[in-house]
Amino acid sequence: MGLLELNRLMSMRQRRRHRKIQSRSMSIASPAKRKGSLGQQDDNPQARKRRKYSLPDLPKDIWHDILSLLSLSDVARAGCVSHTFLSSWRSHPNLTLSKETLGLTGNACGQDELAQIFTNGVDCIMKKHSGGLKTFQLNYCGSFSDTSHLNRWLDIAVTPGIEEVKLSMPIGCNAVYYDFPCSVLFSGSGTHSIRRLHLSRCAFHPTAGLGCLTRLHLSQVHITGDELGHLLSNSLAMEELTLHGCDNIIRLKISCLVHRFKCLSVFDCTALQVIENKAPNVCLVRVDGALEERLVGDLSQVKELQMLDYYECGVVHYACSKLPFIMPNLETLGLSSAGEMLSTPILAVKFLYLKKLRIDLNDGQMGGFSPAYDYFSLAYFLDACPVVERFVLSVSQTRVKHELISDGDSNMRQMLGHRHCNLKNVRIMGFCSAKSMVELTCHILENATSLERLTLDAMYDNSSYGDADRSCVGKKGECNPKSRSIIMHARKGLWAIRKYVMEKVPSTVQLSVKKLCKRCHKIK
Image (cartoon, rainbow, N blue to C red; front, side, top):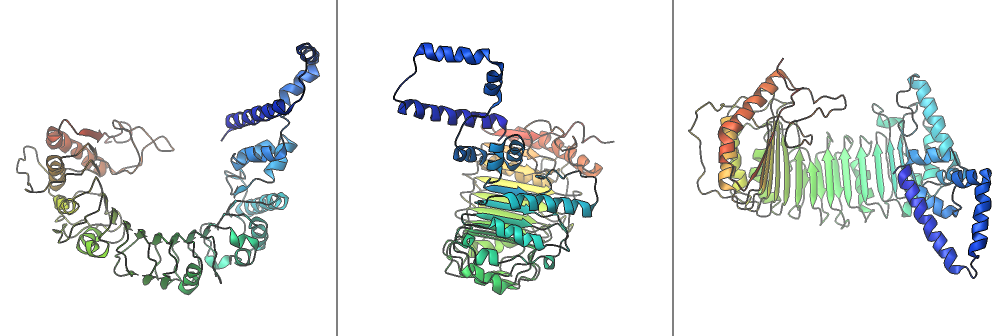
């Protein structure tokens, strides 16, 4: 929110206050008297100057309400020009402290000096703040060797009414450098109000539960499975847990007492062997790796699953073979695989409720694409999803190893008896000239009777582009760099679209073909 929005809010507050004053007034000045008063003010330059530059005479609580809607940087600027704004700045309910908010980006001083400037700046802000915080976010960039002031800042921040605490230690900081003081959470008044806790690159050893805690995000945090399990079982309002890079957790138990628990995300926890889930209402799971090897318990109630692993091969084959039995009620499924050695099998059991399917095949890490993998076999997956409405296929390949379609090739395979009656939106990124991919696309066009939109992009890129030419969208005025071979494959993919796909698009289907950037995707 900028100064324009601030002026609007000020005007609204003024009008409301003036209406109240007028309605309560018992006498109204005569028109002549008012006119004379105005005339006298107009004749006085100093009065005109005060009327032009002075702030409206509003109660402090109204100013606090207005400024609480502004960003921290805007409030700080306002505090430099007015004592009224300064008092509101010192009671701002949302503090986000980082190098960016303190204006230290691009600073020419050394790391030690930068750390000292950051520490002094945050210390000054925290000492002068009057309390009453709702959210406190600190991206620390001070010295690793001296973190004593962090405890003092947290003591000031975690007061009655606080709802969110987010602490992020610097990248490269080992978790042993800072032990988060659990006393500020479990013995203070903030215990009864904190709802969201996000910790990165520190040690955390909770000894009790947090009654109002709904979201817990731990990234590269030193915590054991027993400590985390004890915290969860005593935080009955918990709804969402995210673990990333927490390498000291070997076994995690989620208690059946946590009835509100809905979302579980676990990534890159290398030592984690088993997650024993007894929470009855988990509906969203995000994991890396195969489910059966790590997650145990009743998962039949799960409605959304994201299996995101760019180092694991065969994720799609695993999903087809196992998931209909483990999670029969899935409505949304996202799969990321480092490559598929085996083609998609015919599914013995269908996903009866699956509406959104996304498959991301990426050989950038493992190079796991087998020339024998058949994109056309994904039609079996679609056939096993009778109510699927949206299908997204993303393929990232450093080189296409499959049989390429050739000019005049008319020997296209078909799957008779397959109908995808509910499929409405299909998007394929990284469309190449592999014959099996062209066959899959033509199969969808011929058998998706409710198809409304087909989007084809010969370049693998998750950025959002318009329907026509790309424009240089990067921060440096250019697209993400691509190798010569990738650009060549993209051009062949566009040729295959024009040659074999466009003629099969029904008039009821909106076709969008993403073109290459005229500037960045030239062959030099």
